[in-house]
Image 1 (cartoon, rainbow, N blue to C red):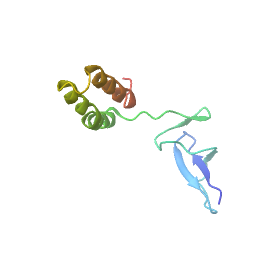
Image 2: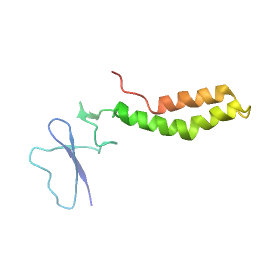
Image 3: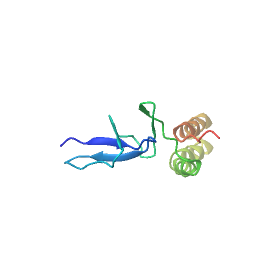
Image 4: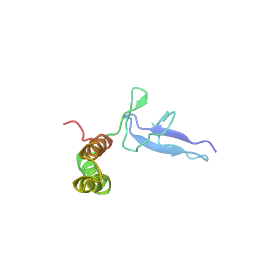
Length: 101
C-alpha cells in the first residue's frame, strides 16, 4: 500500500490517503507528512513547530522535578556540585524553549 500525504492550499496538513481513498477536492500532495500535525507547509518545506509557552512550562516543570531538583538537593548535601545542577537547568531550558514573543 502506498500512502500519499496532502495539504490544503494554505499549507495545513490534511492527512495521508491510501488504499484507494481520495483526498478532498483541491488538496495538494506533498512528499512527506509533518513531524507534528500543527506544522505548516510553506515554500516547499515543513515549518518548525514551536509549542505554546503553556505547554513548554508544563514540560519544564516536570523535567525540573525529575532531573534538576534531585541534583540541587544532592549539591546541598555535597553529593553533587552546584555546577552540575546549573548545567541540568540550562539543558532543560534548551530542551523546552519558550516561543519568541
